[in-house]
Structures are given as structure tokens and as C-alpha cells.
Amino acid sequence: MNNPLTRLYVFLLGFLFAPVVFSKLEPLPDSELSEYTGQAFITIDEPESITEGATKYKYTRINFGMDIDTILTIDELELGRYSDSRDINGAGVDIDMKNVALGGYFNPHDYFEVNRQGDIVYGSDGLPKPDPSKFPINPETGRQFRLSDKGVPMPFNIKDPFIEFAYKQENGVQSIAGVRIGFGGAKGTFTTDIASLSGNLDVIIQDNAQALASQDPDGFFGVLLKYVAPILLGDSELSTRAILQQGPDGPNPGQALDYRATHIGVEDGTNFRVDASDVGPINWFLLQTAMTLFAPPETGATTDCTSRGLFGVCTGGDIDLYTDGCELAGIETCFPLNKYQSLDVGNGEEARGLFLGLQTEALPWRTDVFTTGDPSNPIGGGEYVEGIMRAGQGFYLNIPTGGINLDLKEAVNNGLPRQTTRYTDASLGLF
Picture (cartoon, rainbow, N blue to C red):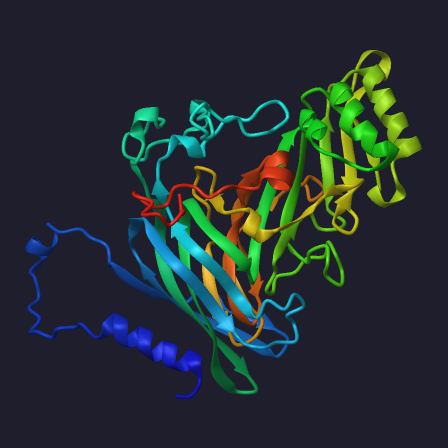
């Protein structure tokens, strides 16, 4: 009983099954039984096992048939404080968060206007000026929130929660290897100040080429990106993905890191794509020429014609650039996690695959993952399918893939300010 996972296993079983009352059971005749329909509140199943070499992992899942709307706040969440050689950032804690909140309350100033340069627009009252076009949908009415709805609850929605245990079978011996709390679906605002995070956090960065004018890249190629590219590209879409990784001061800046990460950013080798599918033959020629002559070698700049006009003349295509060591031509591509204080899980849709696990070793879990048909497209369309995710030893938080979107200014400059998580501020400064 000294194993913490064993104690947790016994506690959860006791918690779930202790309040059982035994009484005499009387069978119902078929005539009465036919009048009732229903579904079990709690079900237990065994997901398909996973075999890796001589090791087999088996699972038991306890499902709770619930649909939960909640507004939950936690002042401090600290999971997994111990010394470990994998801790390259010296964080000391697997998951370290302050002022955590699931859900919150509608505040028009949380959805603010930005100007063409991507800067926040402030009103005469000194507060960010609301942009009604950004207001989310009120879950109670099914319509968009209005200015007069300030203070209306915006709960975090959880569907089909479950508890799952993993058992390791090796050399004829079975032992418990992990436990996790997961959700079939999740949607809403997740607000927190993250100091360190072990797990998976996948963010889409999506904007248009005009946003390049708000950046300050280096060198002559940087000048082209800032001043010339927006003119030639117009409103062409640019996009990439960001994941947990080593920060600029790490031993390998720009490399993925799922253990006690303090930064998020564009991983080295991930493309930063511009979809310039219809910019015209002259603009496309100028763009191709600039890439060939002036793009630094570390950007790995490539162009690919995807549309042609009269006589087969190329009129546009894809432009791919690659980051190197947390930079793209002087544009920062690695950012501290505490810069992003409110994440919209699902972006108004249901994200699948959210779970918090505790493993005695790196462990595979069956879970919903978001997959795309074109690996070279950083935000290509895809779907959720059942897949396998390997969670590292210790505490591990998986935030669903493809569920969080930022524009370029939010990713690089502004970050994501904290949204309203309490009905009254109570002088805590947590609005």
C-alpha cells in the first residue's frame, strides 16, 4: 500500500462504491418492465489493450453519463513537485498554475477592438473598446451576447467524464501503471497563469498577410516581409502551429518539450505557410524572386504554384518559411506560457481528448486525436479519430489538438489577457 497509485486506486473505488444500500430485489413482470426505458448512469468497460514489445497495457474505464456546466476557480494548482533530471528549465513542478478558472462571466471589454496594426483600441473610460462582432454565443439563449448581458454566466461544458486505470503486464506480472481523468468533450474558457506545464498544448496561429506589417523582423528580408509582402500578398492567409517547447534560453531552442515546459512556440522544422493562391502573375513573380534572392538559408523558403491563368502562367501558390532557434527572420516564435492567460478550448465547438493523467512511466493512452490529411499544411482540415497518445511519467495534461486559435498579434505581441472569471472582483485583480 506504499505505492501512491495503489492508494489512489483504493480511494477512488471506495469513493465510488461506498454509498451502496442493499435491499431485497423483486423481479418485475414483463408487462411492467416494458413500460420503462433508461440508461446506466455509470458504466465500466475495457478499452482495447496496447502491446509494445514484451509489455502489454490493459485498461479499465469507469464512465459517468453526465453533461456538466461549471464555473470553477482554484487559487493555486501544483501537481508533481520533485527533483528530476528531465527538468531542463528548473521549474521543479510538473504542472504549476495560479488563479485557475474553468468558465467565467460575460464582460464586453474582454472582446475588444483592434486597429489595422493589431493594437488594442481603448475607449474614453480607459477600458478596451468592445467589439460586438467578437461576442460569443449565449448558451442559454442560443444568440450572440449583447452589451447589456454583462455578468451573465459563461460555464465550461464537460461531456461524458470518465476515470481510467492502466495496468502493465510484463514477465507474467501485472501492476498499475497510471490513472487519468478524462472528458469525452470539452468547451469553454480555460483561464490561468501557467508557470510550467507537462503535457500537450497545440495552438493554431492564423491571420492574413497584412499582420506582417505589425512585426519588426531583422535584415533586408525582414524589411521585405514587413513593408513589401503585405502589399503583394493582400489578404492572403498565413498560418502555423505552436506547441510546448524549449524557450530561447534552453539547450535546444525551438525543440519540442512536453515535460515542465515554460514556453510555447513554433517548433523548428514546422512550416509557416502563406496561402497566396490568387495574387496575380506579376505579384507571384516578384514574390518568387524575393524568396530566391533574399530569404536567409535558415528559413528554408520554398514556393509552390497552385493556380494558373491564361497560357498556364502561374498566378499564385503556397509560400513556406521555417523557423530556426525560436526566430523567423528576427520575428520571435517562442513565447512564455504565462503570456496566454485565457484559452478558448474548442473555439466555440466541442474539443475532444482533454485529460489529466498520472503515470509511473511513459504510458500510451487511447484517446481522440485531431488528424489532418496533409501533414505539410499546418492548419489543414481534419477530423477527430481514435488514436494513441503517449503521456510522460508524472502528471500530464492533454489539451485537445486544434482547439485554440490565435492571430499573429496575439501570438507575438499582445498575448491573451485574462478574461472575467468572478462575478465580483473583490479587489483581487482577477478580472
